[in-house]
Image (cartoon, rainbow, N blue to C red; front, top):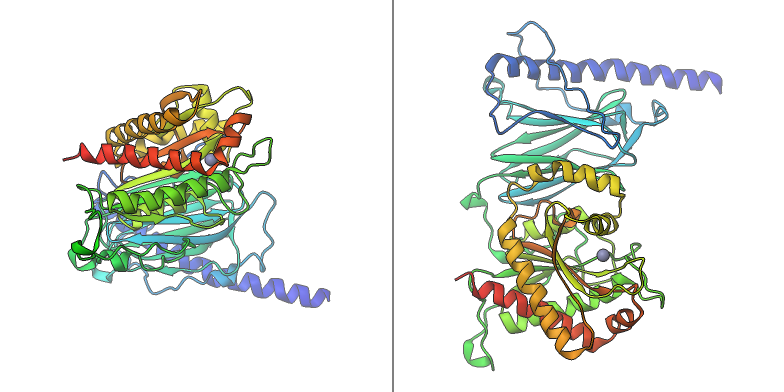
Length: 470
Ligand SMILES: [Zn+2]
């Protein structure tokens, strides 16, 4: 038994000796070239990212190897050779369990999941023309090991060729993105569970731009509740009330919060946020189609769990013009009630920060860390448009619901750092329909008429917003 074990360890060490120098050689070559050409664009910065403890990860230093050496490009990463099976993970090591992507011709999101928080840093490397190596972006996850089964992904969407992942060093997992044509990228982390998100953007390339029908084909790895079919244009005569897609808005993503193992807020009477927001979302989707004639894609139309980063990715992937996330509120004070609508920005009050923590499924500390980097992440965010959309929706929901129910409170438009809105490239809002922690409002949220009124209010707000775009 002991002999077998020793033999196994020796084999593993041998594998390490073969694989690590190969990866290292590749990297050294890359960095030589980086140093030699100095062509990293300003926009494509290298950087390191603070972890939850606020400790800044050290930047990777360029290897001082003699230049002029031909970079090695032939090595294939062999993650299996250094899987955690071979070398036991040290205490405190994060296990990289998953790498996924969502792709659109001008936007791709990659998410790397780790079972605990790890430090990471990223760098960009220019192309090596003579070796036909494309420009690359790599992210090193420190104190991390790959779980078996995590594999390279072929993307080939015009922005990225491939996403490669390997055990670069015994304690470092490296993700390398082979880039094709990208203009900008953002790298950031979400917490609980920890995941590193890489958003890359580029020019929409005509030849890769697919018609809406194809865009709505089943998503790569998104368990999106049945992709809502695109409404086929029908002969006008067959319609009682012919509705044409209004103005510039053709497709809206409706995102009922939570789902599956995440119930969201739970009222004293046992009402679960995930159930009532789904019912409101389905009603809203129907109204948007019938009344506004727009395509509607739902991030979920059943009781299933969808990660927050995936919801935004879906909206970007389907080229949505608007993104509306629907939630129900909760407060410690059971007397608190009312409607409020959020858009992405720094929280202006402690309550807004607390709500963001709750909706993000994380702590206030993590929310403040997100706030520290939020402005950088919001470069492509439609801040003003989102604020206007939030304003129109908030007023319309209040008007609609308030005209049918007594004592409804208008809590107004607010701002907060919500994960589900980070990276959205279209005007996007989060509607907190009512308080499940309030007995009266919990009862109303389960009432179909109240749900209808709320959905109608959101639809009317969107209609007003769109009518002003012309
Ligand atoms: Zn919620």
